[in-house]
Every structure is written in C-alpha cells, then in structure tokens.
Amino acid sequence: MTQPPSAENHELPVDMTVRQFQELIRDRYFASDNARGTAGTFLYLTEEFGELATALANNNRPNRPPSEAEKANLEEEFADVLAWLATLANINGVDLAATLIKYTDPNRVQGIKD
Image (cartoon, rainbow, N blue to C red; front, side, top):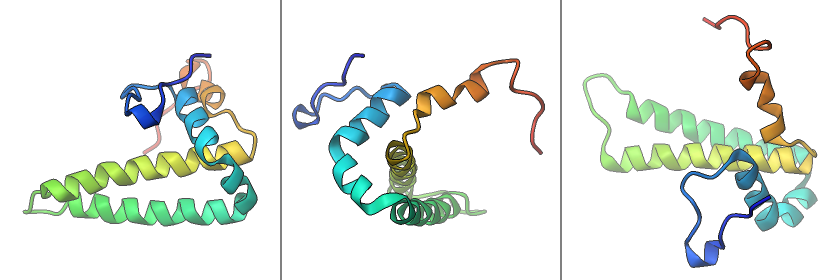
C-alpha cells in the first residue's frame, strides 16, 4: 500500500483514499488513542458531532449567508468528525475502507431513507 507523503513536508495529497486517511490517523495518534480507549474516544467523537451541528446551523440560517469564517469552521468540523471516526475504527480494529462495501455493492444498497 502506498503511504501518503510526510506531513512534515506539507505534501499530503488533498485527494487521499479512506484507507490512507485511516492509516495516517493510526500512525500519528494510535498510542494515545488506544490508551484512552473506546469510551473516551467515543465521547470526543460526540463532542465533535455537536460542534459540527453548530457549524451546520451557522451555515444554514435563513436570510443570512454564512461568513467566510463560518464556512471555514464548517469544513474544519467535518474533518474533525472524520478523524475521530477513523480513530474509533482504529482502536476497535475496523477497516473503514472495507466497510464501505455496504454502499459500493449495488446488490446491498436497496431503497432510500426519507
């Protein structure tokens, strides 16, 4: 598997795969994430969901477009949720890329949620 370039050189690809992203998070944070455990990590993920909810609200107010700072914060909160989800997957031995077959296999994806 090809590893993404070093973050120290600021050469990370903008368009990395799910697997590359999960490996990047594992390489950087696994020791402390694993020591914190699932319960503590899940709490951080839920905190980030709350921050994402606030950012979504700030970017979708009626009669007022979001500011540039609010747009930037929204992107940051999406990134944080993805990072904490990858962390939770890492410490629980789940390969996120492999789990996506649920949505990429046309025989498994049936119907639309309202």
